[in-house]
Image (cartoon, rainbow, N blue to C red; front, side, top):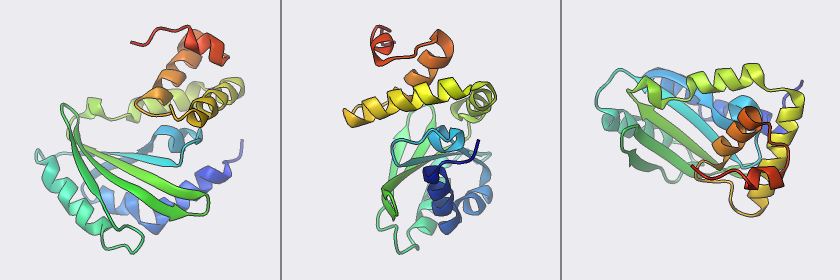
Amino acid sequence: MSESPLKREAERIIEELDLLRLLSAYGEARIVGSVALDLIVKLDIDIHLLVDNPDTLEVANGISNSLLTYENVPEVRITKIPGHGIKIGVDKYPSGSGDWSIDILVTNNPSSTAFDSVERLRASLTPEQRETILALKRHYYAEGRLRDGMSHRIYSAVLGRGVRTVEEFEKIPCT
């Protein structure tokens, strides 16, 4: 299966900002989420950075300062995620398909990363499951509801419960 145009666009953005080189100077950086799985509906790039440094805020400040040197990055948001680490957010990075958001989770807790789950999903996704996930994500994106962990719920429902339609998904209780 060839990469989607949106995945190629996301990878160009990552290269433009030299994100993997920048982040690798601090620890182990991996692309996760929809870009890693080529299941992009919302223009969103997620990267997790596992660091040895106990001061994740110090690391986040260093990365933020580097990102702010780019002309197309006018603002960087830093948010504490209790129990997980620090999230660095670039809300509007302009590109051909529109404004992308970029979220970088800086953590010193390996269980806070999505490294393992991305590898499991990548290894197990069938073409049919991929199409179902994209259809569900498109549906909820059109309704403005593809946020707050909805993608993760969709992945779990399709892979773990065999969900194939919006109607089947809606019957699953939120946990």
